[in-house]
Length: 344
Image (cartoon, rainbow, N blue to C red; front, top):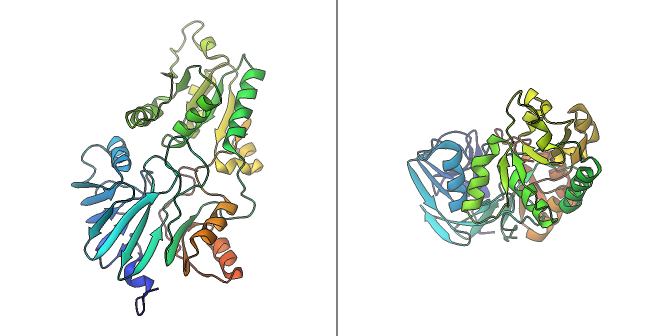
């Protein structure tokens, strides 16, 4: 690490998020600021109203879709691997593997490099670039699933469970709760890879982001709106044996009960907790997560091998304790404003 330079001189936690004094910018700020570096487009990390936003082109597109074209006064697209100078700081974005366009922010100043992961995963995802290990002095990691109980199965095996259920219950609709940005498109892509070529029906809340993925070159195959004309004879029967994707909250609404004897499924890392699935009325829990699990969090920290490990949000105390047992310096930041359930 560069002599006489403390990590807090380059990045420091504040009520608005991680602030970089020599560059005068924030990473994923929780309130409107003059200049922001945004790691990805989920609403707990990407907010409207900043004066200027630096992010990947895909993240800027996602923010425009979600918030409108005027979500910021100034957009600054930065491709993976390109270095941008902000004040006295070099900023480089590297793939995070979370959703399309997601990036780690590597900031370098006077020989000190710190990497903020945002949210990330290590599993293969056909809809986005895979995580890149970036050596650094200080690694700033998320910790959404930072407990040893969280060890995610292979996503393709979970999709196989869904298809097996569809085959076993051809008279029932399978309603799959998925988050609109990232999870929906990943599940669709995994279904296609598994050989499912039928039309997949989607709730209206998913359409704009599915259209965005198509524009960005991710082929999702035939999709159609999951609309039922209320009271029309035979309308619901056309969804028998079909897969319908919708926001998780929609599975418990009257809309869901209009489908023929629906099988309620939910694709989430939290489905590892069976009591949570049972309490939510989930008949078919699918453990598909867009976050790193315990083994991936700890393996990644070992691979990066930083001088210090900072932990932004999630089960930060458990990951910090693991680091201490490994002889690594760790610091939970206890940042607020980031939702563990937002896109798990």
